[in-house]
Length: 136
Image (cartoon, rainbow, N blue to C red; front, side):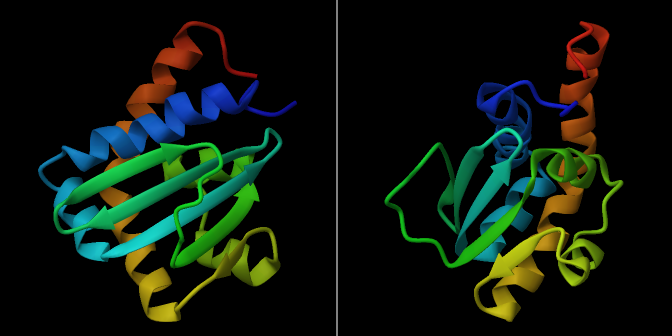
């Protein structure tokens, strides 16, 4: 059974971690330094997040968007959950074909380390889901 019941939960928790990270003193500057637009397409359940990470700020778009993206990532929402917990090696997932990435390698390589400071923020968010018995 998938960890997330629907796209709304993906947006609430994974999108929520991005929103918290944008204002975080360590994570925010690292996101803004990426200088690219990232689109993450999750499946099981289907959900799309687009992140415009620019020096002037981070914009998070939930759902389909016409915003052009420099980097495209796709994976299951369960792997996304494990990644944000710090329990899933995205590079290994890409090598195994469990996740897919398109875009300039230099930009992709900037995205993954920029995510790490958001891991504790994500774990804190999903802890509320698990305490409420929403986890599957």
